[in-house]
Image 1 (cartoon, helix red, strand yellow):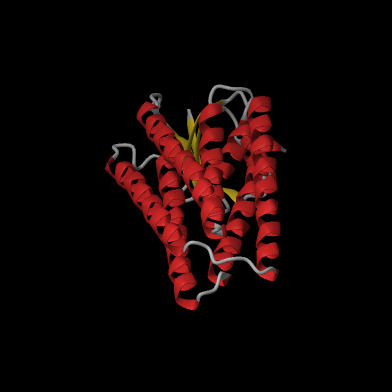
Image 2 (image 1 turned 90 degrees about the horizontal axis):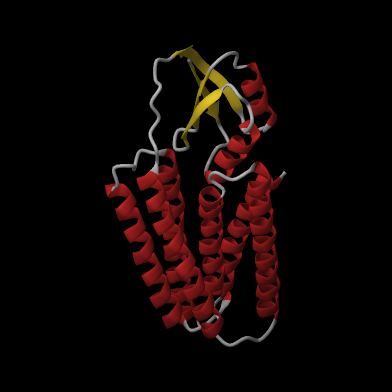
Length: 264
């Protein structure tokens, strides 16, 4: 058996990993794929020539290039049951806070909370695609990705329209207390996710590292919404809420296009 390592410079999260998995699906001489998202590396265990695998990776335009190739005696590859359990936990927390933040965002008239709820939903989509499509066909994976991507784009577009309406309209101030309290709760939830993953024996696995990156980004967004709530109260203006909402909607839209790459 051979062990070939590729550097994938544009592999940042689950989306690129799933894209690569689907591209390589069906190549018969692949024995195992080992992703190291944090270091942007892919290790392919295979028999026979690497040419078809290398060509497929380069065609994805993710900055993939072969950096080493050698013989390997490894035949035992770890199952990821604990990893899957952790990812389901993170998915459940993200989806729960999507519902909580969407509801409280609409009630408190905070676009920051609404946008953050969609960011939580975006993460849930990424985790869901990775978990629900395991063992399924490539067609199933693409269908799930396409549905998730377009749904996310639709919600983000509606959010942008609402921000413009509020920016040029005469809207009442969002409830800054609700913004701060809910964002603090979301911050605590994300902190718990990070703690669970950090304590996990699987923390060095690619999926868990990627989850930690997603959750760390969520923490930054939570702090942004909390800061916007403080500024709303201080300046007596809804503009800070609209600004943070716009920033998060842009991130959500970028995530949606990344997910849609999986459906092509």
